[in-house]
Amino acid sequence: MAKVAVLVFPGSNCDHDVYHATKHVLGQDARFVWHKEGSVGEADLVVVPGGFSYGDYLRAGAIARFSPIMKDVVRFAATGGLVLGVCNGFQVLCEAELLPGALMRNASLRFACKDARLRVESTATPFTAELETGEVLTVPVAHGEGNYTADDATLDELEAEDRVVFRYVDAAGEAVPEAAPNGSARNIAGVRNARGNVLGMMPHPERCVEPVLGTADGAKIFRSALAHLGAEVGDVA
Ligand SMILES: NC(=O)CC[C@H](N)C(=O)O
Image 1 (cartoon, rainbow, N blue to C red):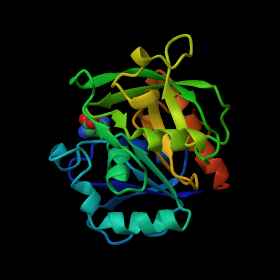
Image 2 (image 1 turned 90 degrees about the horizontal axis):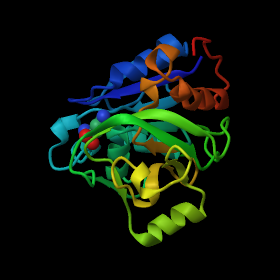
Image 3 (image 1 turned 90 degrees about the vertical axis):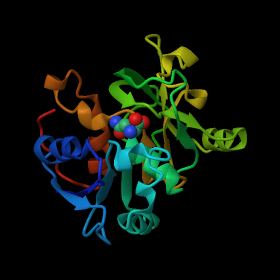
Image 4 (image 1 turned 45 degrees about the vertical axis):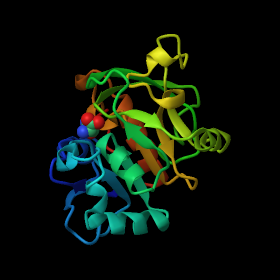
């Protein structure tokens, strides 16, 4: 059983979804870690969940990045510990410079809340190692600032190093610009760090881990990470 630390900032609102997914659906030892703690404690996987930390003031994730717990998340990541940032968590990881780039306001300037199709681009991270390159997952998005951006050199480097993990695609599986719900550069929905132990993604895998939720595709990402950790996994989804 893997130990899962779910961070909680003032304004987090997907923390309980991650807890439910990892504890009740996948049968892991999950617990919440308040952002004022100095340590993630004994953990195999740290999840930085979605929400509106600090009300998205300044920029989404810009204040949470200075919460005391983030120093230990940086340390944990440096030791090779698995870190997953979802939506606001992805924004926090970019602000903390654990991942490159930034998430800007959606090109539409509207909050986007709908199912997205994600194509798996890289399996060189424990989070997708058990998936197939080219496999398309249906995972919901819910964000106002999901427009991934970085300078061209950084985007080229991410592509050259196989660090784009997910792209938004249309029904035909093509990464056409209209398929991105937010205007993301090169349709990027998720990226990893060079080592592969840190993944940030805008769509919410924790919201689709059981058939009753419409799709259980999100469970594949957690299952892949848990397989890497050698954890026995529950059999609900
Ligand atoms: N669901 C979320 O985590 C939303 C993230 C952030 N508050 C945004 O709107 O972009």
